[in-house]
Length: 432
Image (cartoon, rainbow, N blue to C red):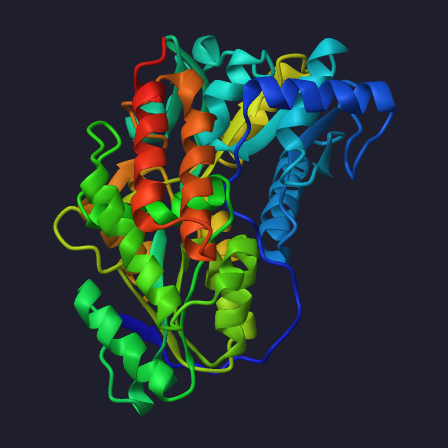
């Protein structure tokens, strides 16, 4: 186990939301509605600019992630005189629909940074350009594991420059005061939260949103109970849902979690008075700048069957990019370069996807990053699950999140949620 014993000053700021969902049919309808109504959100412009302007769409609002984008723009502009990189923010819950809306007008970004799990959805909707011709000539392509290369029907559409995953953050000062060791099993976690609750503090924070963010955070606890997307069983789902329902009933976790994305739970953890947070490596910079207590990270205590998704943003080229060659150079020199991946690690705590960069001392010697990196080999799972047909991915994420949220909010029992999820998942696995 590892911990950071420094105290840090508190500063306000937004945290980056992690995952999102998008049903293709629903997204197309929503996008059409935006076009018909003439509505647009922040950063909705589809202007691609001149030949020396590169537009990059992203959904980052956290200052640490925004710094990555700024540093990448500075790096690329320094190496390419006369080129301007224009980073365009599109809200997290609007990015997919705006990308799809831009297809009808044959416009859109040169580079798009998006939830990697949405690759199939976006490729099916025609928003991404195939990368195969360029990727096949990329000298460093062998340094990337297959798990970060996103394909549909044999064509490559995106590659992740880094990997994100969940771990168990803990308040070391609070645990030390109660003589609690960081838990290595669920039983130890439950016993720790009981002592924390008795001391008048909060046990754990996590996201219970009824969408893919909720499903992302539900998956570890469901798999710890034996759940397998490829071979789902009602018994394993019921046991997994019962674990967190018990946390709610005993007051370890607030029902308000049903309204929290992965931003709010970490804000509450960093504010103090909370023992644990199920959250990701991307919170490293925020923890350093916000938490006034000593904190640490251990792998989620999931037992033999427990898994965590290996997520992260995918990077691709817009289907109607006016500067595809410039976009390709940008990706090679920023997200996919050794130097670029170390920039992202330094700025926001993301774990490099390149095999050579992941073994850099900057990763292996960091006491907070190392537990996440160790978890990749021991409990990492592909996101989305390989067993799901591409067209079923968004539905599985949505339905899983909805049932998770229903249990946390008391709207559904673990048994009912398990049966509903199983019925839907069975249909999705058999979808053509």
